[in-house]
Image (tube, rainbow, N blue to C red):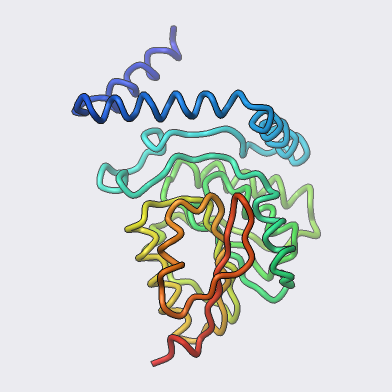
Length: 246
């Protein structure tokens, strides 16, 4: 009962103020999520999820509701729940793009517990940086990165920074920007603007890998961005500095 009371309190706070239509939509969304979680593919994904953490001694698995991230109320509308990344969602795009990770700075927007940063460190990017607004998740990610670096001393340097993705200024000659459906369309637009600012100020090339691309039009409809390889669960875009220099 001790653990049930906080969960019940959290549930009440999430439902407070919602109208009948919104509650119905939420119920349908939760039912769909439950059904999907019972499929063989979902069970296999959970097995891979657990295997990653067993290998590295880390805590990157599971899901965290957006209401349990400890965010300010004003940040909630643009945020998404934390869900652990299947590392294939990063390794497959990099292979399809035929990129040399050593030539790119890696940035994971909405880094959560740091799994994508760790995968990027293992792949040999110049440096792997995660940007995460939730202080709770950043604390977990920092512990995970320390454990990962201890067990994988050959890995590239990595870090997770606490901050607003919209305020973060990406830097590097070539950047791989990774998104695992972390934000709503409005936030994605503003982050794209930051990437374009970087291209106008010294960065020569940016490649975007967008997994679970719910707001793909943010890049697909934007001048200066070229669509690249894609698969069922991800798509990619790239842009060169020539299109954005003033």
